[in-house]
Amino acid sequence: MKTPRKFAIALIQMAMSADVGENLRRAMSQIAAAAKRKAGVVCLPELFRSRYFCQREETAAFDLAETIPGPTTEALAGLARKHRVVVIAPLFERRAPGVYHNSVLVIDADGRPAGLYRKMHIPDDPAYYEKFYFTPGDLGFPAFDTRCGRIATLICWDQWFPEAARLAALHGAAAVFYPTAIGWHPREKARFGATQREAWKTVQRGHAIANGVYVAAVNRVGLERPEAGGDGLEFWGSSFIADPQGIVLAEASPNREEILLAEVDLAHLEDVRRNWPFLRDRRIDAYGGLTERFLDHRVPEKKK
Image (cartoon, rainbow, N blue to C red):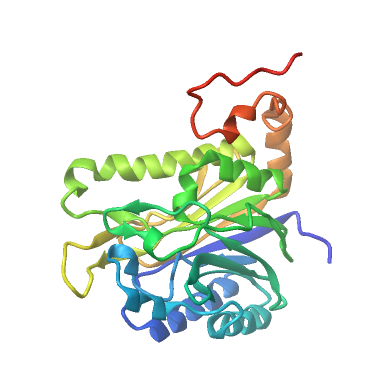
């Protein structure tokens, strides 16, 4: 099938309940609604099956993980096939006993898997204790061919690392999706909230510009507190889609469930890259230092 020159993408901004079955049912309902609005690709938020359990380190939370393929991917594959829509499904993956990943399965519009991504950058911050749960990804930063076009998906903390977006673009992605679970510590919101959210948006718009790609970040909403108590996290929503010039085409509210839609235009992407040829002008012979942790010793330069 010939790849369309334009296709619509949809982001499902959701609030998660403690009922994992209900979260899946609601996600599937929203995917169907987005498909009726002519979306070709639909992306769910990070770890959408449950509340964000990484606020605490509890071994019982590993019971939330499932295999890929598994019950959730089978249900979403049937939905993708029924509505002829590409589904980006972020899941807590049980790979083997003691080996778990924060993953995304891209399901093509015929219900078949287009590709798997495992989160590469794993945070360990207050209330984001992900290193306790997730093994770092080992699949690199691939892009996947789908009915709509070639896309890539990274996950949340990956969005702060320009190298990840660059490699996804170099694999040919026209759009990079960021399923996300990010929010404020309630006690910090008044002082730092606006700055934190603006930095989150700015860095991802920068990825769109620097790589000449569409960027789509989808977040959850709502205040989630651990059952054992604590202030919890207030997820700030604000899902958005930016074009290759960093222009925000659509943006969701900070506190409501929404379906956000925008169009990917491959002709516009090509026009932007012709006029802003950043990929052409990269000095690939001069970036050896990027493979070092820190340049506290001199890296010999190649002779010209």
